Image (tube, rainbow, N blue to C red):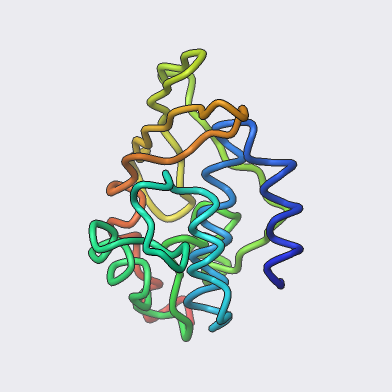
Length: 161
C-alpha cells in the first residue's frame, strides 16, 4: 500500500475509534511486514502531531512501540505478527492478516464525544487491550496510549506448523 492509498483509508476510517486503531495496525504491518519506506509516515496520521518528528514519523516516546511491534511472533516468518492478530490473525491461521478485517471493540469500552478508552480484542491474546484516543478539531481520532496493543500474543505451537 502506498502512502496515498493509506491516506485515503485514514480519511475514511479515522473518524471512528475502531478505524483509527485499524489504521495504526495497518501502518505497523506496512512498516515491519512489508518493509514499506512510507510506513512510519503512515503512523504520523494516527498519532498526535506533538508526538511526531519533523519528518512526520513517530517520535522518541514511541521507541518501545516500534521495537515491540517489530518482533516476530514465534512460529511465524514475518515481523508484525502482533499487529496482524487484531486484523484477523490467529495462531490457527499463522497470524495471516486482512486489511479489510474489522477491529473488535468490547462493550466495556468507555466511549466519549471527544475522548475514549476502548478495549480491543486480538485473535492471539486472551485478554483485550485498552487504547486511549482523543478526537481532534477535524473529527479524527488520534491514539494517545496504546502500549497494551504491542504486548505479546500466543506463539504458534510447534505442532501447528
